[in-house]
Image 1 (cartoon, one colour):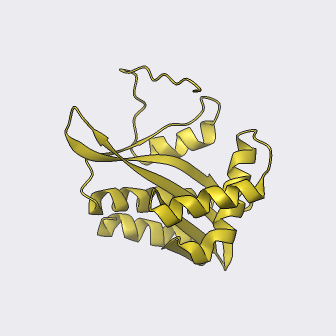
Image 2: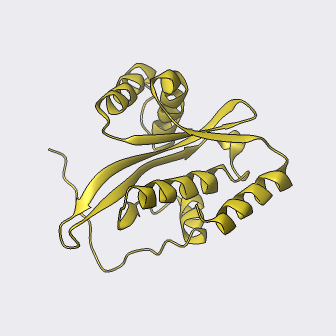
Amino acid sequence: MEPQEAQKSQNFREMKNIEMNMRRADLSDLAVVAQLFDEYRVFYRKESDLLAATAFIRERIEKGESVIYLVEVEGNAAGFVQLYPSFSSVSMTRIWVLNDLYVNSVYRSLGVGRALMDRAELHCREAGAARLDLGTERSNTLAQGLYKSCGYEREDGFYFYSKTV
């Protein structure tokens, strides 16, 4: 995070008068990250399955397949972001995919999402990545507002396709 960006985030937290702590999650954070991850999946209309969520997050952390940052507000788990490494063949560079961003509804509008976005961008810069890609449902206007306010532009030049295999 640039010094000016860090100051803006700090000023915002002070205005809201909250204590926010962020760290890269490890196995000692498994229970709280898995709980948030399960809530995230429920937000996207999946059945709650805390055991499967725990196994999924455990495997990502143990295998080093993703990077997860966890935010606590006044000692309570408030949100997380999960990043996956990838590459752009055309650019011949490392990129990261912001696949999961979730803030518990109790902590929304406190700057948690913005802080997670700032940290994700810093992680990418530190890793020498050329860009950070993300996507969200068309109906998730709250997230879209956050992304736009962080300087992201909706890509209209490409179509993305997926198929269940």
